[in-house]
Length: 120
Image (cartoon, rainbow, N blue to C red; front, side, top):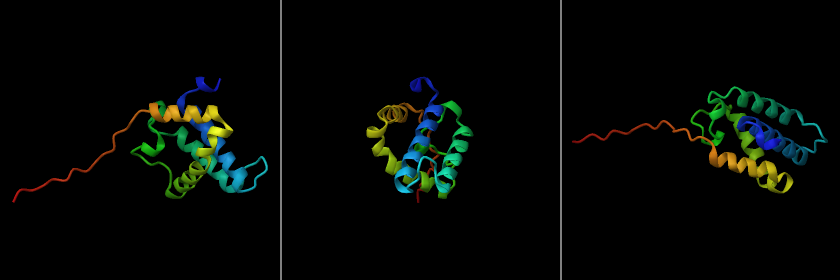
C-alpha cells in the first residue's frame, strides 16, 4: 500500500508522478517523458537515493544542503509549481501524503553566520 512505504519511497513516487503530469501537459508527451523530463526524472531519483540524510531527510526546499545543480533545481521548481496545485484533483492520495510528509519531515537547522558587533 502507498502509505506504508518509507518517506523517501513516497517522495520518489510523488515526484515522478508530478514530472509525468507536467511533461504530458506542457510538452505534449504521449505516455513517455520527453528527453528533458526524462533527464530530470533520473536526476531527481539519483539525488533522492543519495541524500546524505537518509530516511530522516528534511523536505528539499528546507534542506541546508542543496544537492541539485542550479539548472535542475530551477527545472524541478517549475514542475512543482505547475503540478503541485493540480495533484489534489488528479491524485488526492499523493497530494495529502505529500502535505503530511512536508509537515512531519525532520527540520534541519541552517547554519547561520553570526555577525559580531564591536563596541567602540
